[in-house]
Image 1 (cartoon, rainbow, N blue to C red):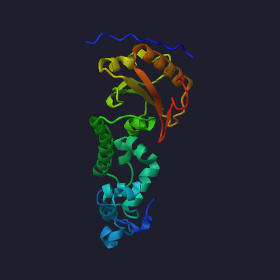
Image 2: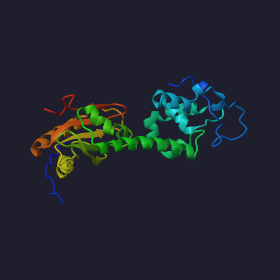
Image 3: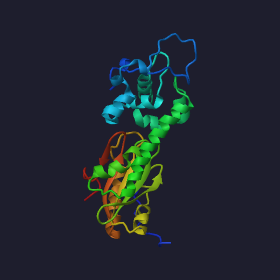
Amino acid sequence: MSDTIIDVNIEPIHNIATVNDICTEENTEAEPEGNSAPVYRILDLHESDRPRERLAKLGPQVLTNAELIAILLRVGVKGENAVQVGQRLLNTFGGLTGLHRAPFVEIKKQRGLGKAKVSQIKAAIELGRRLTLESLEDRPSVNSPSDAASLVEYEMSALEQEHLRVILLDRRNRVIDITEVYKGSVNSSQVRVGELFKEAVRKNASALIVVHNHPSGDPTPSPDDVAVTRAIVQAGKLLDIEALDHLVIGQGRWVSLKERGLGFA
């Protein structure tokens, strides 16, 4: 393993409810005429079986991901209702995160999807991402690894390259900012630890939490991750800015190196 560069010099401050029971209107956007497969309309169903009505009455939390996507799509295709189309998209791209990652043109290639429907899906996902970022304005407190992970997991789990970010905290562990330091391979031979603390010094942070993602989806810390963590902890002691944790974000899960005793004395 390459030697870790510890440089602390800081520049001066200059489940679908019986899918076949939930049917939708004919998709006029993407299906050609001439298909004799039956089409069922939402209006043909009892009101309690319609996804939109169920959402209005029971709340969005009771709907499956496929049903929520169906509401965005509004209509299905011949032989396939909107919920089935939604489930097909989830299966094809590997869930919501896969849809988040997938390029616009790749989703548009799917049967029954045109520009308008793909735009609706992408817009909804982006709103969810922005909602997560907007909460930073309320200065949330970070009192546990899960608090920190919740701030970045949604977005970082979908990144196709490694990104390393630092969550800057004040004396009450309230979030000051989240800054990106590296993009690309994050290993002990390339990470200059001083870069991680530069914004912390400039913004008078009392502590920080380092976060990076594993695009493979497996958040298991590597030997390089542990080496970088050890160097960060040492540098934080010299600068009187405590390194509280180092999180590795994977697909739907994350790991706290501090909880595992990796890199922290």
